[in-house]
Length: 119
Image (cartoon, rainbow, N blue to C red; front, side, top):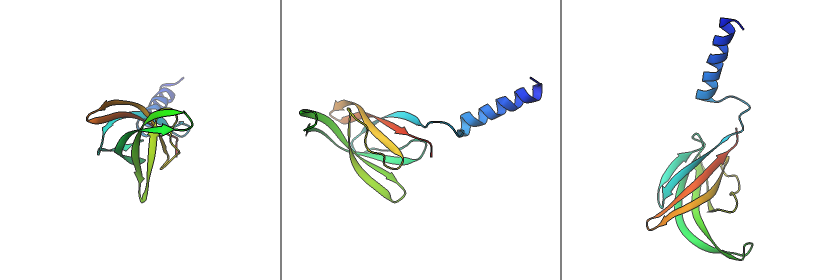
């Protein structure tokens, strides 16, 4: 392999790391949030706002399950979704959320997993 080919490969690799390249499958991140906090997530695809922390009766589980209401925003699109630990939410604004854990109830604080696919 010539020096030019090696240099070109390194430069392309650095560009892919910095800006992303086609063929990537998306990403995930864990965000820790409290009630009333906002965060931009998924490489700027959406903003999330955390609302009510609750334990809701789940017929499908036959028990109470911890949930966090989260508003997902992107542009004019806004939707409030319940986020639970046992399954990811529907896709809104190109992202899915899943509750990792409620770290404290007072003040309400949780770790939320954000997952997205390439655009």
